[in-house]
Length: 108
Ligand code: FES
Image (cartoon, rainbow, N blue to C red; front, side, top):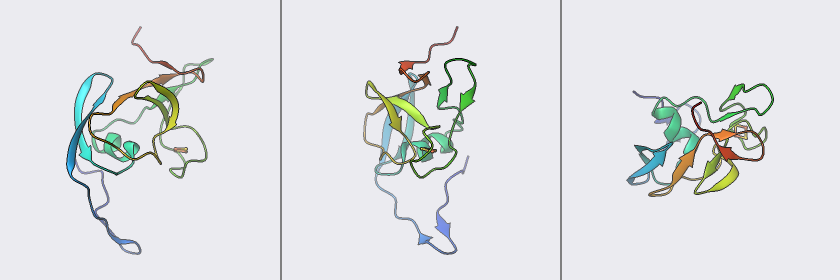
């Protein structure tokens, strides 16, 4: 799958960090060091980052500039991390978030 933009007509070519592994809901995935967590997840086909508390509705990347909070997830045990503006690091543990109080999402 190729969901990354490698070269942009206005912004030019993007330099990638070294290839690293991280964990998404227990699955081992690969990404590039320093890219937004959300970019690595999108490349892996992950579209849902969290579920709303009341209606259990899925949310994912919306603004992609750190403003809307639709992309928040639990990262290394810390809730409400905006994955669209948080750089990916080796060995990170990223979990789908349920609600605003940030329990990791578990299949029911
Ligand atoms: S997509 Fe809006 S804050 Fe990340």
